[in-house]
Image 1 (spheres, rainbow over the protein chains, first blue to last red):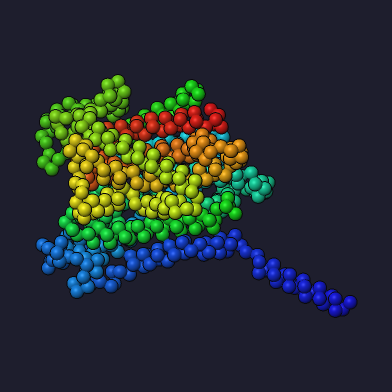
Image 2 (spheres, one colour):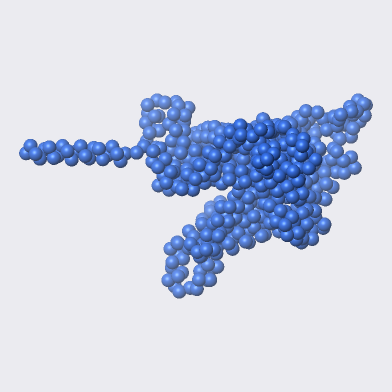
Length: 309
Length: 307
């Protein structure tokens, strides 16, 4: 009898320990799934390297991003090639500035545009979509018709119009990107909210006497986080693409600031003189950066999207 | 069906009006009038010019005049920078160019994209399939402004086969690079969408039935699988169209083809407000009209849609 109860106790203990080991929180589960995805992990490493480059590169070169190397100014096409002897690791740009420092600066600005644009979209889109989805009925109808209308406007042209009228500055670019970037997000969030609002925990919150605002902010939005993170991670490259597009046309980021798009534009303009490095270095960073963002987004979707579980 | 079209028009027309009023208000609120220059004009001259362009009238009247002009006569007004030209002249000069390479790009993106996607789905997990998947992932990071300089490096700088820019009446040598640069990323997206929807259709029960009946592969694909698999592609045509019109700006700038994109950016840099607005509205009309056609097409093809 005694032995038996000991055995049972041990079994129970084992079982408890096993259970403890097995129980994962939602986020731990997602993390595990994400780190299993090789492409996503490699992309994360590449992206970390790019970020590190953007902020550390200025300490490794003797040239700043504004200084002009007068020694090669007249002959950039011949003497501006990438060379360690002159200290221009990536060569020089058409004005004789050090491309290494310029690319670092452009990377900083492009990443900033991507993250700030996505951040605005997340805040506005989540609130807008959650409100429309939760209230439903006429409010939802009007709010979503507004989104429909805004979506059918050719936004790139309106964005350029905005930049022309109010002057071309980074601030205006953010306002313009912010105005358009939240639309998709709001639709996705609205759809998800409409599913969530009929769940028991919302019913419980209503029964508990929470106000509508509290329910949206405390109960609905935390449950939307997964899907919001997935789409935000895809918004970052989309914002970078939009910014690069506008900067390529010379309408976005203005000198002395620069971005991936502006650098690609500069390099693309001089390609026929044979100064390929002016195009290829910024292009490599652009392509590597966007690839990483897309794969990380993919990995996050596999890890967090409830549909695929 | 008729009711559905009416309902869609009911959304399209207010959208257009909002676009017009919004861009007009923006233009109106711009700091400095269109005739503010480095050397200020004498007040008398300025007043005369403003009277000529109707800028001395109250705001609401200017808006209504502008809208009435567009709706009744298709008249976008005069250019503010080129005194002897109207916005219509400028658009009429650039639009045929954009239309020509735009239509080619669209046709090629859609036809090649659909074929590639279908073949990849039929030969699932073959080399063709891997190529299609690789291509559609790679092309995501190759938007038109990246493709254009790369093409110039290859075909102009290294091979010397094609001219690096210009239009020359739209001869084929001048057409190739703009069309490739503009269509690649959309071709890739269409191929990706087509591949996944075709895979889904091919795994469905009625295709199995068709196989069991002993139909040939060709009959299965063309008669039974193609039409339902096309639906997601049709939804994507709207965004693709907008993307290509937007992309034409880059093509025009980089290849100096002289389409409306080039006029748009030049007027943006010159602050020629009436031209910017005219082109924005024209693009808006095209976009909305195209989306309307896509919606109707979709409702017509898909029997599941109730309108």
